Length: 236
Image 1 (cartoon, helix red, strand yellow):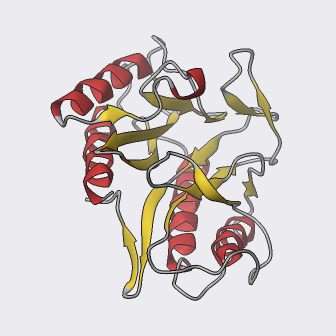
Image 2 (cartoon, one colour):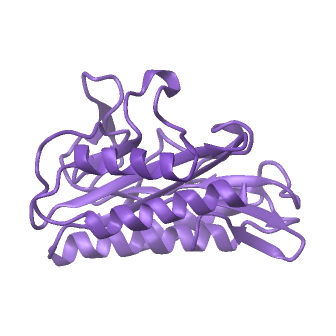
């Protein structure tokens, strides 16, 4: 899983550098697929449940599972990119939200809070704790900053399958759910909205958008729980 996670981290870093005004998400998708081939990895999302692309590209009010397209990104947009691979039968999965050029203070703060929420959740992924300790840490940080948690989509276990048990919500009281043990691998992924938490699914059957049209941000890492602490597998 370390190898799969490293591929995910490397490709996302390449994509981050290419996210500028004028680029299209379809171009980013093609780049990601090309980079997978270079590393002898298979895109985890393409074909999964019928999803037709290598990355999920979700700008602005799109929350998750957005389809890449030929629309150029504009200055002031934000773009969430979710990406995973399978390498030697193990999966890695991560997501980033990136400003496109200069963005306003509200969108910058949304990104910062979502990133910090992921960090707070990861810090609670320790052997001996409970699964909902992670959930609560994410929710507490996000709501204290005046943002809302998307509840329809959750993190998950990951390993030889992209989505494994247990499901990992980004909300809930602490001290509940399975006991965390060394050897567990989780995909922790806060999705937060600038406005209300409600989302809707577009006609493509995949793309989730905020009901109020306000922007959303998404961050994710695949992590391993060890006796020495948590190891982030999708970080360079």
